Image (cartoon, rainbow, N blue to C red; front, side, top):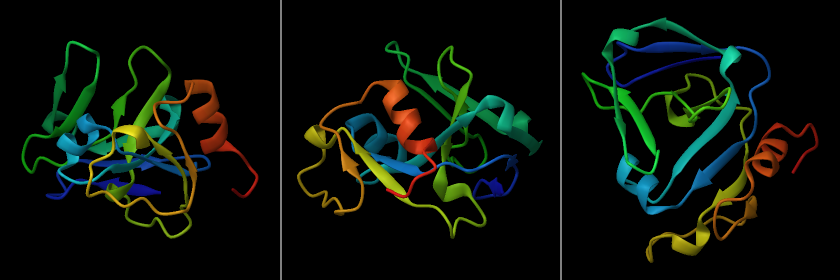
Length: 144
């Protein structure tokens, strides 16, 4: 599965099984994407290959460790490593072919925007679940 930023300067490929999606409704994700939430998934770093454009990636890291990588040309968020873990966060909106993907979790529902209406699809978490629990849910082989 391939993805790219808006200006198509940055392109990447995902190998292996693409996990299920989650939407995060926290204030940081709202500000990062300019929307009610972000829709993304988490994969093992070894399953991401940059096709082109890594030289266009810029990063912003808050003191808390929240990281946002983005295209320096068009501003699209792009995949970025998750702190010191062997995982990568991938924004689902960058994917060229995402027909088979399904949202299975909503994170930080307790701090969602007052105007945010969350679908009934997926497990809701008021805050962030334990990372292992989230990975288990996103990579589960069973239908949720």
